[in-house]
Length: 406
Image (cartoon, rainbow, N blue to C red):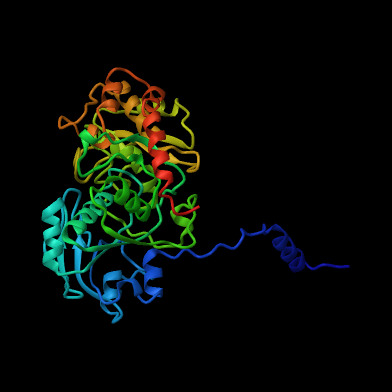
């Protein structure tokens, strides 16, 4: 039988196509499920929502706009966290009290407010139910989970109901990693004994907070996702990525953040003021020896490139610095917290100018003085990471009770 060239190419193409993955249920966020069910659990309630630019639908409409235009729900207030409801403020800032020009709704500022002060804001707003919908990134020191905690506590004090709309942990929910906070180091970058990379969703954390940490539980409801599995990375969700804060531009940033954010506690730039924050690290006087030392550790899933950059703001603004760029080539094998410790250890060894911030910020980020004192004493990566394994195992046992997805 004679086959034309076109027939041969077509048959070769068909033969080369591998079998596709098994069909998966499409992921539906907590908000998608809430809306699909006609906001039934909010019926007859005056609703306020704690959210920011990440509170969007699949077609990138903001949920505040969607809810405001839907007669099935009575949205009467918005509460903005760090960086603000519309996300215009840099780290350590917020947008203050305002009126949202798109909806006319009052916007209340929750940043750095907790306890009675925050409860009074909920009371003043006149809402019956406080809803929370913010995209987290999976790290203990990312402040939105403590906004969640503070708002739950304040809602209880104010006699308000609390509803959490779940979204994916973008770096999977497979495992918890890193040191666990010691209570004497509690701040807004860590209120309670949680692992540095917690491996939970916000709904799971809310349930843990309510039972383990709040002195009195709030009346809590959680609207879970469907179609999400613990091993899923954010790009499998087919959801749009909206930067949760100005220096979290991509899911790649979230992947490294739970390790490299520790450099905020040093005099090394963590890449703020570049297009790759937390993936680029550097300082004046650092050269290729740092990348060589880090690569020499053969850490799984990651390589380090000698890099030079000039931050446009923050540390070393407008000055050229040397350092490393992190390149993760196998995210399933990569351990961001272990990698962050290795980079701290090697930076101190190769750069005589290395120093901790004088305000003790590294202790607040890591949850104790242990990482700083061990590295200062010359401990290596294995020794430092080994020191927290017992407390991490204890957290994992507690965490297991609150996991809601397979």
